[in-house]
Image (cartoon, rainbow, N blue to C red; front, top):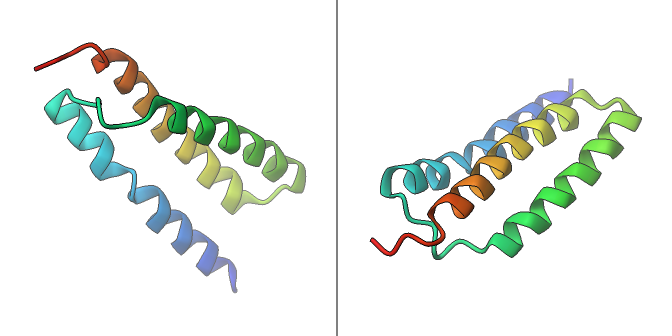
Length: 86
């Protein structure tokens, strides 16, 4: 019954990534987004995903996979647009 809070948290937290990804794609600008921070988040999510898989916690497994997808997208956008001065 209390898993609803986990799923609700997953939806709220992961949907918070959508505006940044959307804006970066739309404007093709990422110069104010730290690649170092994105990489730290990436490795943190990988560690947390491994832990979630070991614990077999579906809410956290799904959340970490979605988080990794957003994070990998942002890292790719940062790398793609890093030299653009438009």
